[in-house]
Image (cartoon, rainbow, N blue to C red):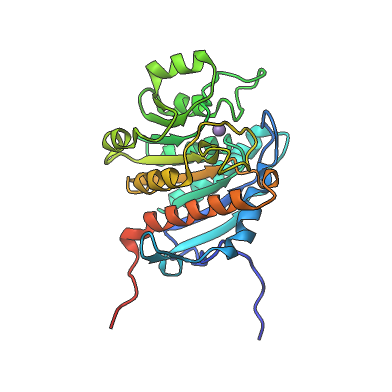
Length: 292
Ligand SMILES: [Mn+2]
């Protein structure tokens, strides 16, 4: 007997009842200011995930032993940002209300706002760990308060002062950097401030959002707003693993735009970061193979 072909992210095939992490795609890029295309990230990553091994030699853990479900991509309304955010919030809400961890694949960075709205309802003391090349702290962009250039400012509206840690930032307006001095913990240029961020976030409920353009465009050209001077793959991997050792209650990877890297290498980088994050988040619960 044949089975229906239903594609999931590699090795993420747990049923809803058993899953502790639930992946969902938010293919939305309507407010992208420069080059769109992130709407294709989740489907491209899902398809190309089969080029990856389920086993991580870094952590000696295997996705096959983890309780992870892929709930697929949302169908989001293009042209109506608030409707799209409501749909993202509803999916994240369903996952987090069931006591599971929502793991979102963007999309442009604004999708994070929908997820944070849901997660913050359950965790009012929510803190944010944010890796990015860009501040994303504008009050408005071309008159719009909802934009991928304003997303961290909108999240600040929800969580308030000194709950947002921003690392790797190397682009933004002078006003944004000045505003950040009073309202967020912004550590520019690289991820060297991770020990400081980890100490401050210890024990707090954390939403971890990674804009993949925090990596240098020489390693990660597949993004809409490339910004040179970024971190290496290994630097991001190490910091992402450290971040996932916190009390992460929601997370996402955003701003992969596969078409800008025809080699597929940027998608492969995103996938490897994703596998390692999933395994680190699941590590306390995975029972490895019994050696006899
Ligand atoms: Mn960015």
